[in-house]
Length: 134
Image 1: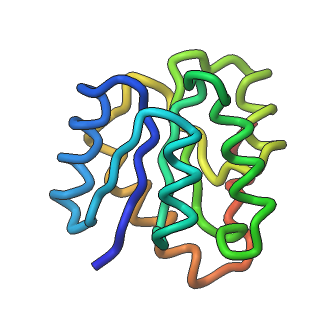
Image 2: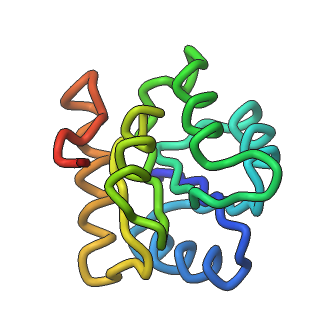
Image 3: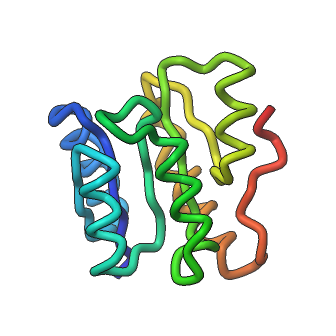
């Protein structure tokens, strides 16, 4: 079974994403901060991380950079989700190493396929950065 880590400070948002991913067959862990995510990443292995940009204390971008800096997680697909989807935010997310940027509110009709494609892409390609992020 594939596993996902959701990093979302809003409990309802975490539950909604968890439900969607569970329906896709993922075992889901959810946390509300980048610090809690770092703890989970040190203890467990995940097939994908989905993180909000705006997190308490440490930003989603710093989390992405720390995931990319670790040899055990550097190739893990990372989806950054944000309601603040300016071109500059997308550029920063890509520069930090995110695999995909998703606008909020998340389109549930397409999100599942995007996650599955990205998780499958990990085994086909050493690079998980989506070149379509602008």
